[in-house]
Amino acid sequence: MKEPAPVPLPRVEGAAFSGVHVPLIERYYERLPFEPGDKLVSLQEGSTPLLRAPVLSEMVGATVRLKLEGANPTGSFKDRGMTCAVSAAVREGAKAVICASTGNTAASAAAYAARAGITCAVIVPEGKIAAGKMAQTLVHGARVISLQGNFDQALTLVRELTATHPIALVNSVNEFRIEGQKTAAFEIHEGLEGGCEALCIPVGNAGNITSYWRGFRELGASPKMFGFQAEGAAPLVEGKVIEHPETVASAIRIGNPVRWEDAMAAATDSRGAIRVLSDKEILHAYRLLASREGMFCEPASAASVAGLLKYGADGAEQVVCVLTGRGLKDPETAMANNDGKIIQCAVDMARIEEAVLGDP
Ligand code: AN7
Image (cartoon, rainbow, N blue to C red; front, side, top):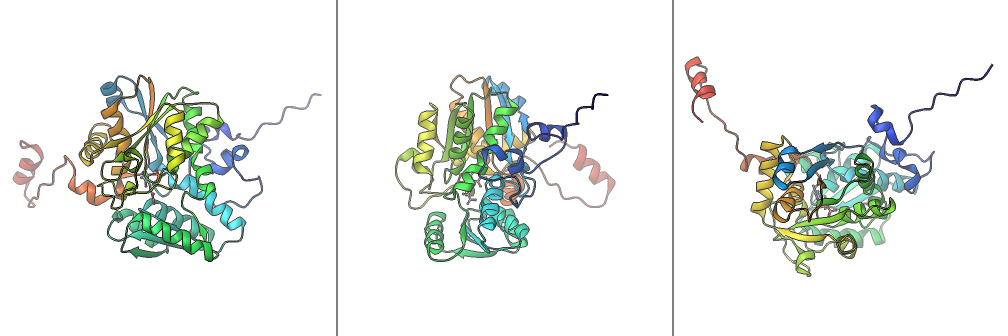
């Protein structure tokens, strides 16, 4: 009698869509610098939704989708890079990790370090970190150094520090970060069956645009890469280091990106561009996403959509905007920029009726 064929285990590719969620490194072992059997530090990152955006699609005359990176465990795309960077650091025997951060890298590093049972220190620009990110970093037990300086100065300091101390640097100078983050391009490529023609993405330290371009190139795809910077922090657009970067989008308040050349190459080689947006344009897109598409992202993330609305998609029909981080990260900006309404009310039905049903 013929043996029945063995039932295959859920394989890596389809796993996310069959309801079995696998850690990012396992999903893409073949394309990452890890071997099966390596001890991984994972919080089941990656495999994030690619959501259709009907209102935006209508507005720009293309099919627009949102890559929801805020759905990662700590609420930003950083987790893709961090699972790789921390797994590699642990594999090499590291007992501590450190980063400079505008907030999300800090929150992610702190979470993965906690998971790995190692210590984490972060250097952040004083007073410029959104409240949610600071709360996350602290609750994971990291040591927060609040620097009387900006992100670029913080990064210079951690690079010097890690050159002389046995602490793993987990900023996007770390190649494992770029490797991990390129998997978002794999997911988009798979999800759209190679049909992505343009990618819109915010640019700060420029690690993420570098990662996406690497990911697409590895699959032989070349969507146009449109990167967006805020006007007070647009070194790549102005072609010079910005000494005192400023923007409401605190995540991308960066004046001297580490991946400068890589980002410019991604834009040029893909026939895309790096362009500039005002804070007003960013906040307009931020509110539009929340109030019309039901999608609450953080201000920096809205730059991808603001850029699409301002500059168009250069004829692309299938467009993906990367929403890099979750709206809850930055409650202050949400409270200061919204179309909602708070009506104070006594415990009294007549007043309640007026409040609920009355003219806005
Ligand atoms: C939500 O956390 O640099 O161009 O230290 O948090 O790869 O730097 C964050 C960057 C976009 C820009 N969107 O990405 C940090 C940090 C969000 C971010 C960016 C960041 P890169």
